[in-house]
Length: 160
Image (tube, helix red, strand yellow):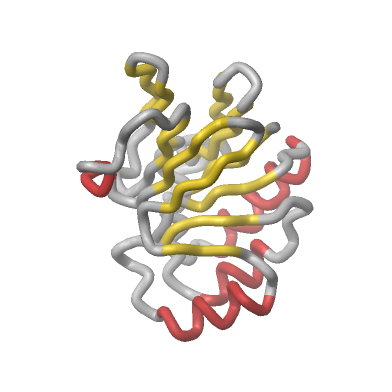
């Protein structure tokens, strides 16, 4: 399974439109948003994804009533972190701030986070910890999203 990973979109609608195009071109099976969407307008753009999206809320997702209404309207699933799921026989944990892993990291194969706006791809024992980093910036070529393959736990960073 190929999972698109995005974080901290911070309502940059131009970049989110590009992110949707990139994920659709990459033919991901699912998308995970690791928090800080900020406004319902961003969810409306994500509705153009060819794959279902799940995610967690971040510390800047303060317009919760409108965000939750848009999430429900477009059939996405978002949770308070930590969000734990099993896809493709892989245990996955998703948080926004990596400090939210505290006490929750166990035997998950995959741990995803955002918040830092910095790329992170680490193997710790048999666990992959991944954050594609910044995607809401204004500097072309420095924004990134990720694609994670659950088959072999490889990641691809897509810069735009």
